[in-house]
Image (cartoon, rainbow, N blue to C red; front, side, top):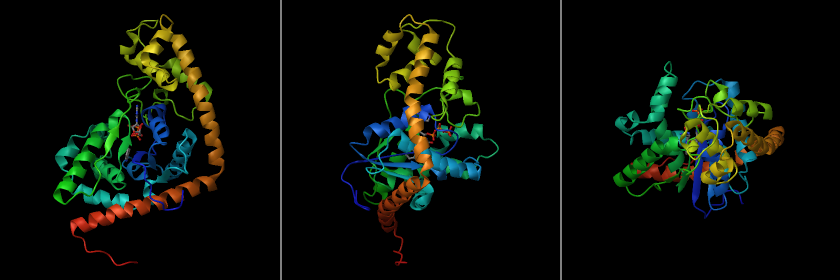
Length: 340
Ligand code: ATP
Ligand code: LTN
């Protein structure tokens, strides 16, 4: 693809915060669909570092994690020749549009956001204005690129709805400016649950590492975490198992990894013990993650390759984003700036 070529495919966009360790929930709920849909869309995939600082991060770790996450996007199968991958802070238009969209977002709307409520409980010593205004930045991420589709897990549905409301509000106040994006939330695996606490979702920055499988966990760790995963007091799998939070979660992960319907998976394991399910699931995870980790190691050894992909991605993103931002300035009545 030539450097700043505009594309004709519809636009698919998504991002993940560089916090914690990229986890199985992130892959199943989001990244898997990025990879599967890249044929039909022009993909824009970000590591959203501006979002990550709503929670205090250690600078050296953040720097390493941004590169590591981008390498994991590539290792998962995102083709950098057909899509763009970049770090959000390399494209200043995100923060600029976020400010503007803050002025089109009501406090009543932000007060209803469940991620804000959850994170306020988790980080009660640092409930900062960025954490509160976060959805306007996410709306900016999406609206800057005239995005058609946003593949995310179920927990992001509320933010997507707010993004659509903000876009419609701006368009109605001025004239059509932003494309109103559609969410894409998968039917299976949109909410993978924590392995130990089956009431809450698997989360990559959980303080208990036994709650999630990191995509970079070695095989023995994967096997141990799956073996210890919470089930229930029954012992074998029946058609009801899918309704049991812990067992249902393991069956769902197995079905997604093996591309099988949940009914087929329940049939396959029917009358087998929980430990049979856990063993087969652990085997499937190791078989999936080993080649992924090998690709990751190769990419991380070639820092120049990764940096070039991120630099090219950011350059193309800045070009696309500046077109939308210029239009927004004009609609608002800002005086055009002279050329530098
Ligand atoms: P953190 O714990 O660091 O806040 P997280 O694991 O919740 O992170 P995000 O960066 O907020 O992950 O989300 C990245 C993507 O992964 C989003 O599309 C989100 O919907 C999806 N996702 C996160 N957790 C899950 C899950 N348990 N099941 C399915 N999808 C998930
Ligand atoms: N808010 C999301 C991360 C995110 C995102 C985005 C997802 C930031 N910007 C744009 C999709 C599109 C989260 O916390 N998972």
